[in-house]
Length: 474
Ligand code: ADP
Image (cartoon, rainbow, N blue to C red; front, side, top):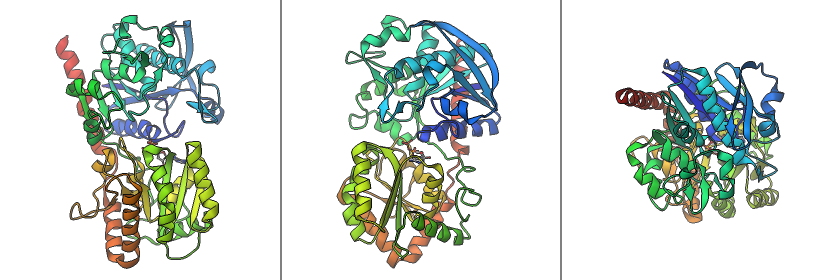
């Protein structure tokens, strides 16, 4: 069985969020389990500049909305990179200075079509596993070109980003015009690229079972709930894992001291370093970390409006992220008002993310919706207790106090400022007054299995079913 995993990003080559982690860790675990799985991403400028050795594999050319499109394919270990300087040799992956590139549809239509061309050139690909709107056109190209012998699977990592574009851009896609109708890729008169993945892929997955059910309801379906219900026969949810080699407190080179469940002295030092890094007062106050995109999805507005309350409860807070300008600005201003108690870093900083995971006592994730979420699992591995809402992957991966015998998290009942403050208040009192409960939550969290083994087995089963189904039709 050969899988070509198509993604717009993969760690450590290009990363804006959790998709990059998934695109390197899941294929690695599949290979570990004996499946031939390569990953293909665009050859971005940053990768070219990084100096990694690249082997030229092949040149590709195909008919497209631009006439003839051409690209070159390079490889490095289990990665393929598609080169097109016109589309990818620029700063930024999807945007620059907070503005989306105006030619994103053209860029990722090229990339998707090029992925298919690569699969055809390789000759032995059974399944193309596509991810998010940037590769959702692959199944549409498989259909329109009547490619036999390659099945496709499409994974939705976040329904909030559907790739919606003006209908006048349709000719760029070089797809039959009959695909532009509401039961396929049209969405209220516009092009919806994600719909191509949902409609044309043989199987559709999301990154947690709860999210796969939620998105079939109006509350979480972002307008696609009807379509998703209509494909429920091929829709399922498989929870993400984390790369336990990258995120390993016992061997992490990005933190000042390593630690493990039986020996937490290193965590105490990480906490001190984290406080130093943000000039927080060195006292007994619990530290609440937050890393991520600063957008309403993640409940950042709730954290901002709860900040006064959290600080007056005696909490110290550390935030790392980038996102909406007004959230960034609000947080910066609050950091200067609460010097010594609130530390804010606006930016993307891998090493600092490791230090925050290692040095915090609690991790804030009051998301309004969460397809899976990786940070809560990373936190658990680093003995940092996640404080999470009860949605999507947060529901599936965190068992909170009061929910079972061996809890390892705290629940924010609903995504409101009030409920967030209640959860932070509970965390502060557990931390100060109930050290044994705090230690047992931490212990339980660190003992959770958050690696990819089980989930990769579920993907393997799905791939097997896809291939068996294809064979049965021959
Ligand atoms: P998302 O919805 O953004 O994919 P996840 O929780 O699934 O959120 O994954 C986020 C991943 O990106 C984690 O590995 C997290 O540590 C990382 N990350 C997010 N923002 C930053 C940042 N500003 N600096 C460093 N790492 C970040």
